[in-house]
Image 1: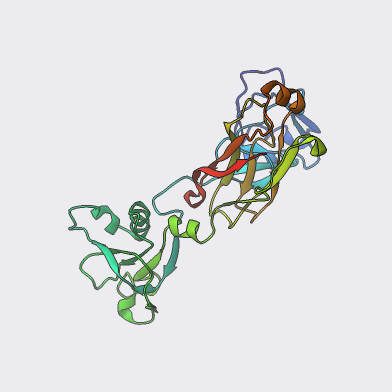
Image 2: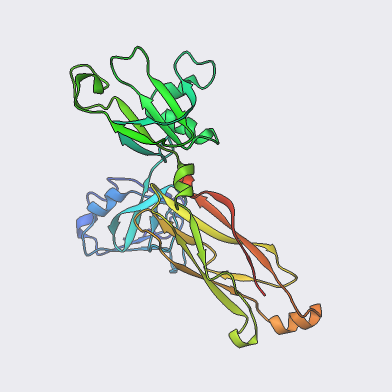
Length: 318
């Protein structure tokens, strides 16, 4: 079935190939398709070959990648169901507190920098549930930990913001009053944890290695390389790291790959990024400079806000 010459075919929803999918040996789709439902994989024969456009470089749908080095159109996509060598996007949208770490049934004995209840004049929304409490902890710069009291015996729920985790934490579980619903033992009465800011400080960040002695010269054909990796696994989506020129010093600098991509299914994946200075000898003579030191930084885009860093890893090449 050849559909390549249908430029208005942008979306292929579930059920599109129910009647013909089992007998197809090859499905050719236009390169302009923007969305391909994962359910279509169950409508086709396992031996069916699927291609997009006329060339390998043809754009794929926004919700599909062909390898872990590729990126979806949305940084909050993580690869999930696989078929025909393709992985489909599993999108995890933002909601308050989604990037925090939680410990159920834990009460902190720690300094309180802010106590928030439904009657509070400011930030009262943080008392509505423990995830909103965590989000407000992320907003308050001095907050490193939070605890949320939702025990049924209390007249109102309370959010506590802490500057540290204190000297002691207590597991509160087993007694009738330790739960959020009277007569039940499923919902915790206390929920504590820490925000993405604390996770970043503990290592949930982008790491750069072999960047201290980058010297592009004739011996290495004016090509140098270094390594990018993650210090922890993102809780959701992807982390994109893109080298950006800060000061090219009159030279042309190329990056390969232009974007390093990390997914939440992998931890600390190393990616080599090569900086190339084409025709460097000619340009150096034209600039009449013995020491040219172009500078670049890294634009980090992440669904998990713990990894977000607008300008990370400033690097100078000699």
